[in-house]
Image 1 (cartoon, rainbow, N blue to C red):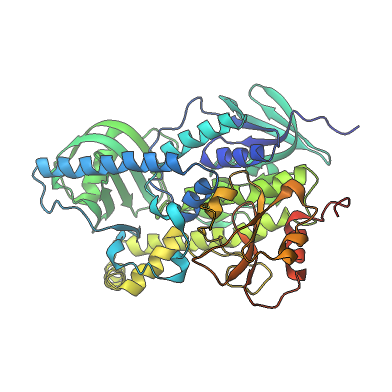
Image 2 (cartoon, helix red, strand yellow):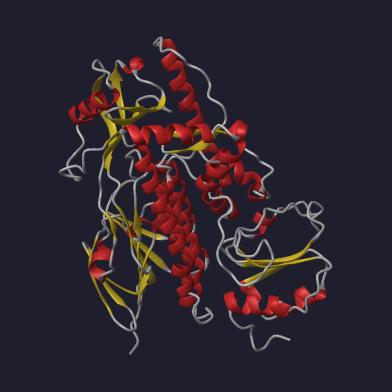
Length: 520
């Protein structure tokens, strides 16, 4: 007899990636259980912001107001940091220019950004949100998961599993579960990855890094922002008490040992050269390295990986959290379609095909940043060249596009410029925007030319693909778009361009399967 499941999918790990994936599955009416070893939201200081694909993903699911409020609170903390430094008599206290990200600590000036670049076109309201700390993101996702009825089990740890042809027995600290699919979102030291036997090739760590939120004195002698010295790199701000240090004398002896005030103080004094800085209390602290590894395939039978379980690297540029959110968005609807028996052949295999190249790029990008931070004379000279380049609009725009994720593209069939790219947030004639029609996680066929050929091709897809007819005054040359549930453009056509609808039909079948046989 087939196995009876406690849930169709079990997700190991209830951080932002695991919660995002669980929300996507629940949105598609797939029963999911999330196992999270922590009993409360992780308050350790981690990623301080999200990139454009991440903010866009939240926007498309109707969660932009939560991001806006989290960013407002973060900006207030930044203003408080500036006020504290000014009150303490620190020199050169001024409001920095518009922030566009950083590369290896080299700040990118937003006033140099060429916002007319085509890769920034059509971002919509999501393009205005980015300064959202990881803790705030996790709380927002936790509330969303509760609304959708996700079974989040805090204090529960995956201890093992037995995978078979018809399902998986998952062993936990509280007992056992039966499920059809297991997804490891359990971080860089993933238990799921290890027990499933995924290879994890890459490069070993060379640095010891600390990031912390502390109470300290003598901070007025520290430089604000990123600073390079003969002993490493450090950062101070952009909120009161936030510090980061990077030393280039090898990885830490014990990654798991508690981070103490003495350890942070010694590292900060060594790297900054400020002998009088004193750390009196540690509010939150983490230790990190530049270990950079990636699994060759994100799937092994009924077991899949997402986020840091599939790829690890240094945190510079804040790419890890964003890469994981992208994994969850890409995987969620594909796994849901597979569970419900509506997936076309090979759909789940496109998860690795689409996400692995982006993960490999992030590993190389972060390796390059570590190399550019080294306290060596030749590296310092190269850093000066890069800093000079980023003083130009062209270089700032190039680096900002990479860091923000603008212009990311999957290799999909079709020669239209929008195919494979995130769909632009079109303002429609009925007063809505494209993102308004993606809240329910379904596909969207947007008919912008009142074309019966376009609409007829969607006949038989029922609740898999929503069809919407409207005009788009700002893009009159665009006739139609087929948008996947993750927001990727699967097909596009321009007004006046000859097409029979066969290419649209092929895209529909490729991503959503065959139409219902009973459809007219």
